[in-house]
Image 1 (tube, rainbow, N blue to C red):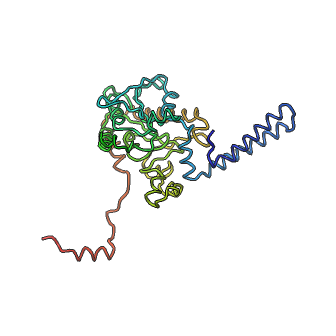
Image 2 (image 1 turned 60 degrees about the vertical axis):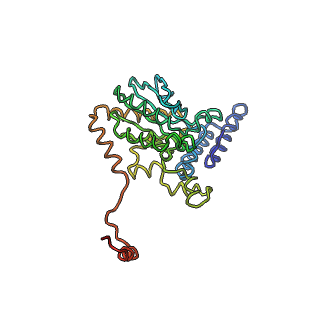
Image 3 (image 1 turned 45 degrees about the horizontal axis):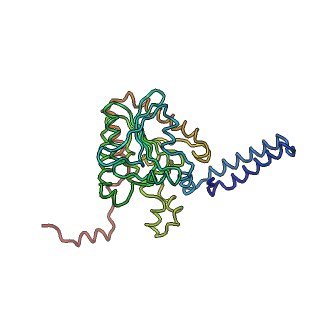
Length: 335
């Protein structure tokens, strides 16, 4: 079992408490009240530890091997799911799962980036890094949703689009840009849920929606902390510094207007109580669908456009420095 650095003390106390309970069955050394006090101390330790998490700790939670992936959410929240394969152009990309699902009687088209759980499945899923055909498959399914007036659910969880030569040869950058263009004007509600890593254009390729919810310990960034550290400091070991500087967690992104809602995770992360995580995500999806289903398509598209137009800030009244003004003055004017 993978134990993260900040969880080490918690697991040691849990093991000790479990051993004491087992010993107490045959030879009672502790009263029930004493065991309850120990359990309360353990709970306080958990609350204190998880309330003081640093950005890098949360990145490690986000990447935990037992953290639920897209396929887990689909199986847990869908009453039925039928997977659709292929982009009708090149091949089927196993890094993206897409299909039609039924949640509490409502039909959805569901898309998700899947990383895999063990060595074999991770290789099969290409570690959650889609090729161009994966994004084309996703868009094919989104257009199918629009044709039949079905809402779209998109589960984002990727370290980035596949950066290899084969993907570049088949137009990786172009197909992501095309997906952004098509999603901006897709005439049906799009509900996006960031369940893990949301890195760069690989996440954006299926991440432009009307409502963007983000799991508490997920992250959403233009680059991974390791990549940022390698570029800025030429030292990937400064990943914890980069994780703090990137402002890529839910609290930061809510303030910037990049996402719309925080989805709570069980204490310590979704990997410690997947059932609760599934329920929280399902509630978010159904709440958003209730809000969108009566919205006219014209209003939906306009709101989606304005949502992304408002992201970011700029100042049109920036005073030039004296050196810059002198440089401009010295340049010959155009005739």
